[in-house]
Length: 297
Image (cartoon, one colour):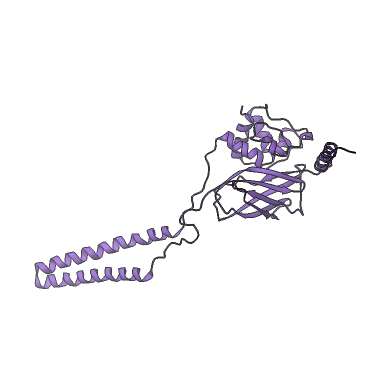
């Protein structure tokens, strides 16, 4: 009789093969985020875009990628991404129900790549559900305008009477009415600007202050570098897919001059014409952050 241990071992091997065979048969891809998400607020729509490249080179179309998000409390939701723009590019709109540090992954083709932890901020008071800014009532504005004109009109009438009768009391009342009327016009002109500014809800973006190295580490994951390059400096690096057989350099103890890395990251083929490394369309700021991380100790 076959022991339970041997049965478990065989099942484990079959499961490993089921996962590994598609990868070795060419069934792997690089998932690259357009940009690192920032300013995400609970309860508000947020769009994320990404590109799927088979072997990091060929754009993959006709896929049905999904995004799985998990809250600190274990709450989950899945969103389907749809093709958008260039071949191989997809986008999904998400709404995170609560604030906190959300874990999330993108599944596309045979890959399910974990992305950097996403910080979701609580909604501001002005944008919270059920709280609305009170509109400025038109009647109060009209009344204020009438008072201004009335005070100014009385002042002008008083000025006429003061000249005719030469009364000190009339002169005093005239001065008072003119002062009030002119003052109301001056202060009234500044009110609309203040009121208009209060109509727009203030959104406080929860953007964490990251060092260049920390930002580079997140980009190393978000841009898909970790799919081909092993790098133990990435926190919990074992949680991510890394295709070890691609021949890509192990970057754990690697360092190079910023000038060389800058050329290679900007356009890999400028550094080596036959390279398999894709051009990820990195911005200058992203390149500098990646250089800082790659050369970090």
